[in-house]
Image (cartoon, rainbow, N blue to C red; front, side):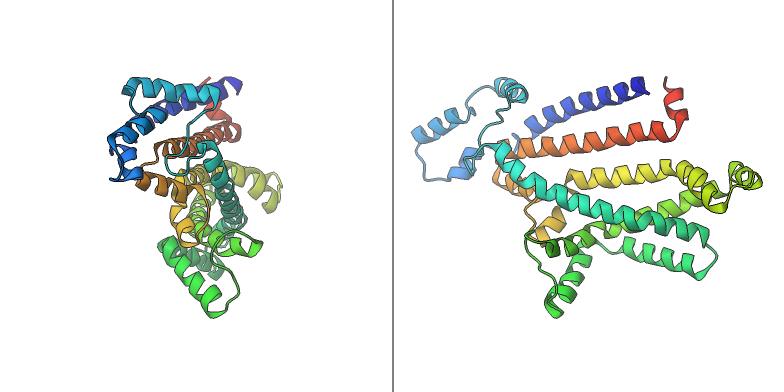
Length: 308
């Protein structure tokens, strides 16, 4: 198990180095940020001073080495726009995004897995059909459409919930529902299909023949064997959200998260903030993927034994 985890972490580190390199070079193909930030009313002398101050007058390979050295000394530079350390700017935005991601994931797990199990057990009754109808409808509604309906109903007509910001617990309700809507629908469907696949297996019939109760067989054997599929879907969903999949939600509800920061930085060509923000998101995605891979091996010993 330890050897398998080490291989997973090593692959993540190699992927991280490739992402760092791509981020550095791709952020520089859109033009000089000084021309965008300062505008046209600057003299050539002042422009040269700013280029020297931000290190943009150096050869590209020296800028790249300087960028790599930042991972050792922790100095990722100053924002071209806000003139503040980029670590402070990203840190200010990271926690609200993690809060929204955590609340959305918690609501997804709380609803989708039980609903998927119920849909599998009651697949021939109206309960199972109702759950699957809910899942199909939820999967077909884009998050921005759901957000619009929630705002119209609960903020405009009923005046129950606030729309902008993250100041109170009430601010979390509509963004969390919007963020988790499609995830709940997708994970419910995958959980149902995975449970249907394992409920007909020979080991489930053997467990019943040995006198194991339906509840014990369902959770001890059925859910654990279905967890590979469930973990895959959860990993993909969390990775997608961590990779700024919640930008639309943050924009609609004026949520001060990292997704909104990345969009603004890309538009303003704020290289240091954009680079560090993308790298922070990449670390989150790689961490989630590594944890899911390790969870695979824990849930199914055949995976780690096959690669031992």
